[in-house]
Image (tube, rainbow, N blue to C red; front, side, top):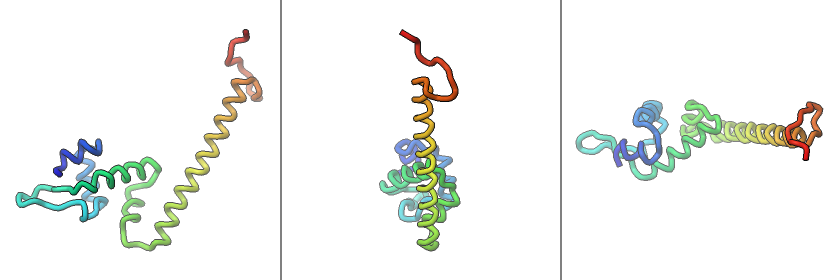
Amino acid sequence: MKSNEVSKLTELPISTLRFYERKQLIPEQFLSRDENNYRIYNEGVVEYLRDVRMLLTLGFTIQELILLISESSHIEKEALVTEKIRFIQELEAKLEASKTFLIDLLEGKANFQTQCRSKH
């Protein structure tokens, strides 16, 4: 498929696809050229790019993604992913504590006193 089709399916601008290519973030297995030297992507690139978007959303940098697809050590890759899991677990704990506090605030149990609900 051509760049414009990949762009539509992944909701990524063509300029982002080009950027990923320059950074060698799109492995050669997903990209070839036709007789006119136009880029042709295989269908697997769509799911791959969705994964890339998810990893970026999770806080991975472009450099970290490049490391993950490189031939570097499995130990390095495992450490990187494990660190992101740890970060997410810490974030989950903070969010849970925040939710608990807000529930306490609504119920008038927090030290910070405010009337959030009308009295009936």
